[in-house]
Image 1: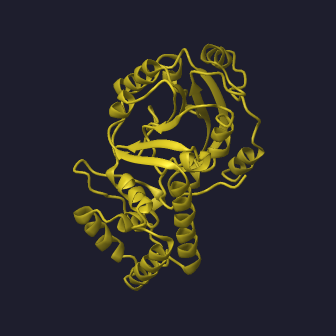
Image 2 (image 1 turned 135 degrees about the vertical axis):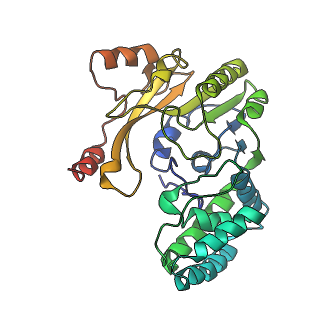
Length: 314
């Protein structure tokens, strides 16, 4: 099955996990798909529900997809803009990136947002306390070669068509407001910032918010799936066994390469928490017992590519 990749990039994007996530919702029935933390939108755009409410606290993400929906941004426009901006970036040996960043922080142009997300360091989406985008340049002046520009413009066209074929509403709002609007007939896919791990997001995330999210999901009586992490080689996400202790859990190995050093390569057990039993899920208390007995934390099929990638580090 083809994976549709959105034009906006950020760390933590679920592109490599979307097939696994989608497989758990294919047979479910619901009236509306809801995401309190849509991020780049990769999950919704691949599940392709008929009706969706896609929300995020980051106004720039919502502004971009609203512009796409209104045809104010097209593949042809993106191709022209990135080709022109790419030439300026190359001629300035990368310094033009900071001109665009300054302009974006003053004006909020969604095409500047796209430019920054595709030329910043390591695909970060980080903002300062005043809401200013502050990620440095990726140090590749020839970032927008013709092949990449064509790829991005094609992504814009593909996602635009998906949006056009569905009844999608994009909203810039806090997750608590989204929770207050949930109905029992909705299905909620929740991908909050990962608690207990360093994240680069528009807002911070703390234990109190994790508890508010859990209470809101339970109170809505809607079916839900939540993405989080279970463990890495250093520690375990204990919130799964406290805040989410009454949920089912499904796990999959995933491989991150965060930062410029190979030593930052890290295999993680990704987790899907749900109030319904998924294909390969087990109760949270059973997973806790597995960990205590030093048994496998994997509930899905083992991915041989994880071992191969980790071997490159040694």
